[in-house]
Length: 133
Image 1 (cartoon, rainbow, N blue to C red):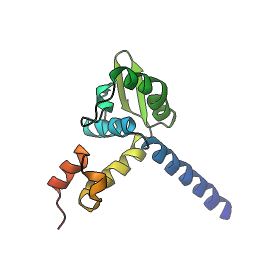
Image 2: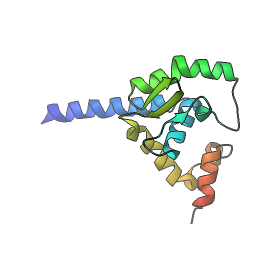
Image 3: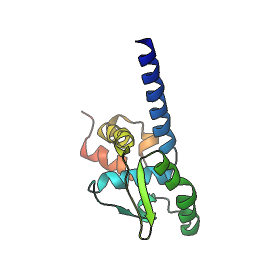
Image 4: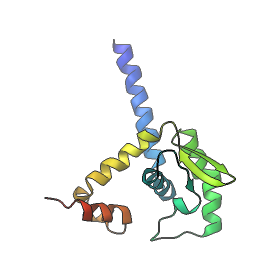
């Protein structure tokens, strides 16, 4: 029984490490939120779905970083699938794992410190919809 718990523990640690690596960059966070907002079977257009509207990046740099860093990482983890023609991304087989983090944050936006909310369009909107009691 100890071996099973050990293996399950290792699997869970790997899963959480992958989720936190995936959400450690703004373009990846924006893409995950865009996919959450879209029907599960619909791809989202790139590069615009991976842009924070408050801080638009240089278009050439952004596209290059998506192609060579962010999209391959998310795809390797199974969180997204993507293609270049047309340039789109869709939910991967493990998307629910990373989506759960955003759903939990959005559900408790009122409890998140202002320093992590103000300037984040999505969390600001969630606060307006679900004010703290």
